[in-house]
Image 1 (cartoon, one colour):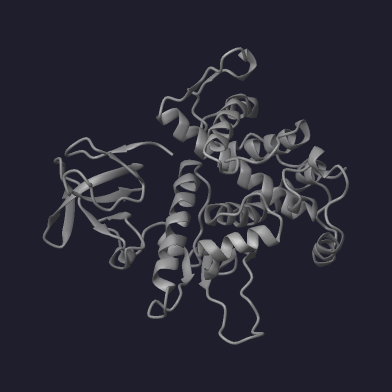
Image 2 (tube, rainbow, N blue to C red):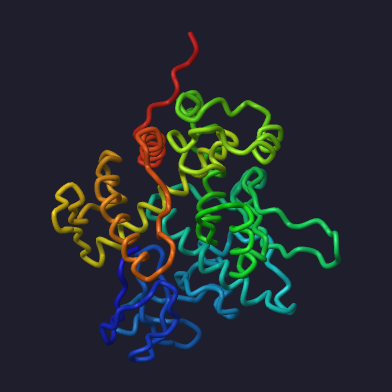
Length: 357
């Protein structure tokens, strides 16, 4: 992610900040300008605190401290481009629900920051009632033995279990399922991958090319998952897949690879914003000056050449602190080939499938 700076006092800011901790200015994110703006109140509206003619309103979810995004004053919407995709939010009067929903929204807004920068389609249910992108944030029903809410995607609807916003519960699940990585942002990036498989692959005339890279998605999905949970990943899976869950079905392989592509692009943008340089002693092959625009055009190899030295460095720093690797995954040539498909798909450089002769 890019760095943000208060226009009033030059204090560095985090994307989620609602107030500048230095000068106290109110902050709002202008998604159209990709700018965290210091604003001052002007009646019922807000203006840039450093001067300017723009007028804004805050997203209606700002009243719950669940959003800090701005809308143009003339907009007919009450929700920002991220929040207008919410179909269901939890009952905020119940214990812990508000805080958990706020954490979900923080991760979701980081996701939308990327989707907007990648210029990906974001149809709402109003735009497309049958296949528009929507979110249900649901809590497990009370009572022993009641069915749990399953996180997943179904034809544009992404459901997230509110319990995932509980760090202890999420870590317990991560350990039980043998996952090296499980975060809210990771969930959002994975599930949105399923949505864009529908939009960019199935409906975008790229299905045969995708099958040539990820395998035949027409195999029974339910049976594939049952087999995966019963038998586990095949021997040597690390050579061809980014995670063991990616081995379960080509749809999951695509979504897992898509999520890792977003991990890489976002982290490289942050590293570039901080001017990160990797120049380890006596290791020329791990040197990197991270200056590329990860959202720009170019071959995926440029991303990988910057990513591998960066992850080696941050994993080493994490180990010095006695914590797990920041990026505990291996990018093999086969995985990079899959990531190249995602990269070309996002960059709109893949031709349409050739019609059958």
